[in-house]
Length: 482
Image 1 (cartoon, rainbow, N blue to C red):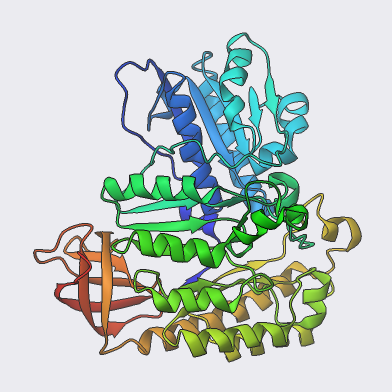
Image 2 (image 1 turned 90 degrees about the vertical axis):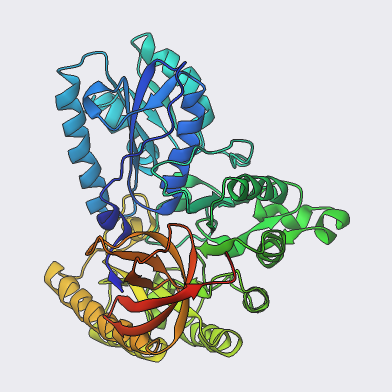
């Protein structure tokens, strides 16, 4: 499966939650970008439900309109700006409507939104959602409201998210916030702050609630899940200052993954996103030990050139990445592996680009998320490096990467022909009302005739055909996992 960017695929899903008859105000909320933004919107909806808001899918009737934003690329920001223009056109017809910006763009462009362009009433950063009740009082009083202060300890672990726009099958569970890896192209450390992990007990309690509601699959989520480390609270960078007892009882990602898999043997478990420099072999052994942990690892590499990796401040080399891939193949021979790649990073030569293509040939990823480089203000690359690759060259290199990935995706899907895959039914196929769609453990989409099977069931599917993105088969019975 070849996909270029998450937010282009999502197109800013707006979300609807169960209505509380005692609430009188209407909230309309859209989310863009990474899965973390969608998870954060569920936290926001939970907080605002207690402030008297029901959500609506009709923009025109909203009292409060929020857009949860992404700053990872310029195109994502331009998409949000177009939406803000739409909101303000509606606002002119409904003067009581208030408009707010949440998330990464809120932190980065706070002064532009409130002071220079005056296009929103409220700006709220990713760590300030608990301050929404106070900020609402400010805008209700006719004043602009802003809070983009980054936190060293906020994880929202004490808030039960409202599951929005859900199929009742899959759910996101945030386990970390922020990032300490200062990749030169990335704004996340500046917009989401330092890395901190959530209390494992609060994670277990949230998953228990989902299990009790009959959800079938959860994704453990973070900017870098492999860096999860709980030792009683605090930033990961301060772990060396922890007491001997705290260190002895610390929970890292492998332990957390094992804990969740053992506690919920009937629940499918995924995780995202990983960083090569922080991923360790013990995670692979935990995955191999538990059938309910999906055999898929999203392992962004960004470039196949050691020189470019160094310029990106990626703390792994090409050979170290190959060693990690080899270890995955050894311990998890049927594991799906996907990638993030950037074409046209500053100073990238044709030789660097060829290194990326040769790395792809070595790994033969199942699918990937591929981008042209987009300079983000405030990052080290923007401050120190000229964006010197012509746009036409970027696009040509990206096209070559996508074409190669398409061939590798086809190679991987063909390898599943005449095998049986356990598939969790997630919904109706986009192309046929007569077919279900779901995903295999390797995160490949599978479609098959509906027959008498039901949403949320685990079904064994015999694969007889495929495209580069999809497996096609026939159900041969329910899985023992039901």
